Length: 131
Image 1 (cartoon, rainbow, N blue to C red):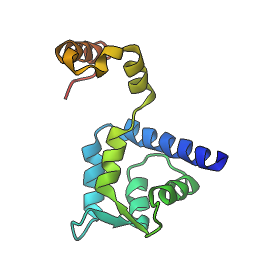
Image 2: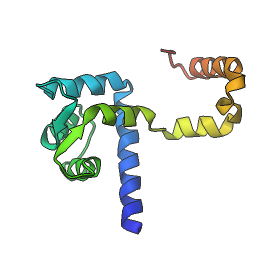
Image 3: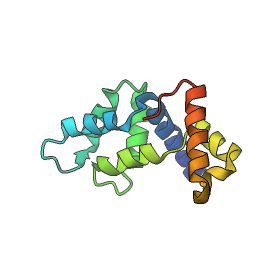
């Protein structure tokens, strides 16, 4: 159980790292598409490692190998990069988690217009341009 928890923490930490460095997941998607010669949405684990390495994410070789083993859960040596990109996109950074816990109204759909204004203000205050 401790090993599984440690692996899960490592995996989440790497997903957050990728999200923070890449910022726009479409860059990640395009990077994988470059290597997907048949346009199938799948790439080999070796190509996956090459694609991530070429994004200059600061992975050591052992981190990249360990991360790839975790991503390739069924050990078929293929990665569904479309699912992987979605996973990176859905991964919450510490800042996002802090925002959600300090803004509990955010999760109430009836408050959407209020939330939209709060998020826009938050982005502007932090010098982030809304997409």
